[in-house]
Image 1 (spheres, rainbow, N blue to C red):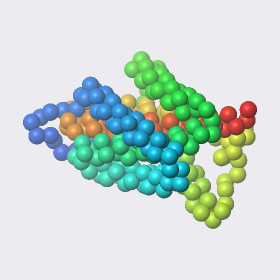
Image 2 (cartoon, rainbow, N blue to C red):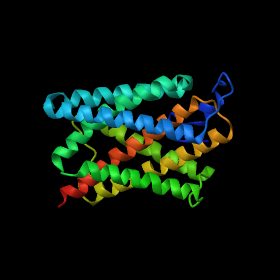
Image 3 (cartoon, rainbow, N blue to C red):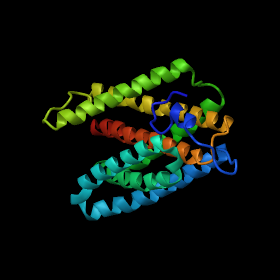
Length: 245
């Protein structure tokens, strides 16, 4: 079960100890817990959005701090999936802070962009879920290998961009609103969206192999990680398109 998502990889199931009482992972359980995490994120995001609007000076600190804490939580959960029932809700709250701050920034620049990005993200989620259930898209080994490689390449580009920015150097074109920048964002959006297929495959196999009950939280956490990434990339793409008007 190869996947680029650090919380949803083949070693997580392999190393997961059994649950006391014999309870196992179910699809409905994953859906319920994904809803809970999303609700926590939305509520937390709403509060952070309002707070940033009243205190714009803390925007940078909140976004960087919440991103770092969220990253640490994801890494810990990937190594300690038994902790996911505690880590996943905490991640939902922390990621809500990050999403709220970022959304507030884009909303201040482009009216209605947040709603557009959210609706497009949900639309892609349900469209890919339908395509996966209908077997129009199959998570073959070659598909997984190519997608993991592409996701890793994007991660390296973003990491290089962050490191270079510390020295006042910007990677040309990809962050601008020209055709190259828009094309880059389109590619990243597609890669982020296709990672949902890997998440669906992980969840399906977890249910089929009677994974421990707490893995529902792990699966929901992994799905939320991908959805947040897709939403942020959608904001970037829409902002580039809107800046050309």
